[in-house]
Length: 250
Image (cartoon, rainbow, N blue to C red; front, side):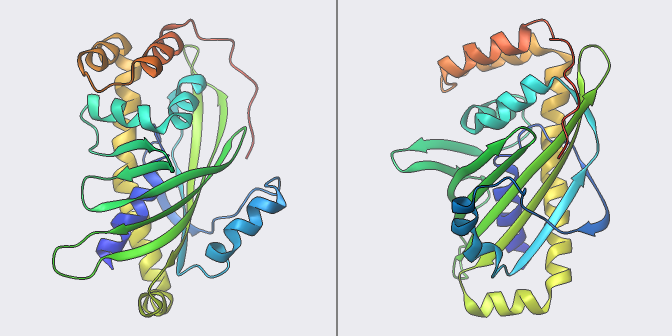
C-alpha cells in the first residue's frame, strides 16, 4: 500500500510544478469545479464514481510571480527540466505521439493528460503503474485536481495558495476492495507522500525567486533543455512584474 501511494503522489506532483508544502490538518475531500463541461465530467466519471480512495491536500501560501507559476504548470515537460536543474526532483515528463508520459524516477510511470483548464484550476487524467521487481506491477487511474488562489504579495509577486486533490481507482479489484476497507489509512498515506513530494517544488520556487539568472544559466548548460520553452520562460522570468492582478478565487 505504501508503494501505491508513491504512484498517487507522482501523478499529482507531475503537473503540480512550484507548489509549496501542504498543511495536513483536517482531511479534505476533492471536488470538481462546477464549470467543467459535461463531456469532460462524463469521461472522468468512471474513475471518480468508483474511486478506491480520494484525498485533497491544502498547501500553505507562498510568494511567486503568478505568470511564472502558471507557465510552469502549463508546460510540464519543461517544468521537470527546471526541477532537475535545481536538483529538486528526478521526475521526467516527455511528449510522445499519443500524449505526455511521466516517469518519477522511482518506478512509477504512466500517461497524463490535462483535460480541463481555467483560471485558477487544472484537471488532469492519469493512467499508469508502479513497476516492481518481485511483486506484480500495481496499475491504476487517477483524476487529479489542482486549484489555487492568488492575492497581492510583496515585491511585485503574488501569494499563491494551492490545493491538490486526487481520485484514484485501482485496476485490480482485490486491491480496490482492500483500499476501500482501509480508506482512511490509504488517504492519510497519500497525503503524506504528496506532502513530501511537493516540498520539492517549494525548493524550485525558492531558487527561481532567489537567483533566476543562475537557474536560467544552468538550464542553458543542459543540452536536453527544450530551447524554445527555455527562451519563452526566460522572457517571462526576467520581465518586469506586471501590476499585481486581482485575486482569483477557486
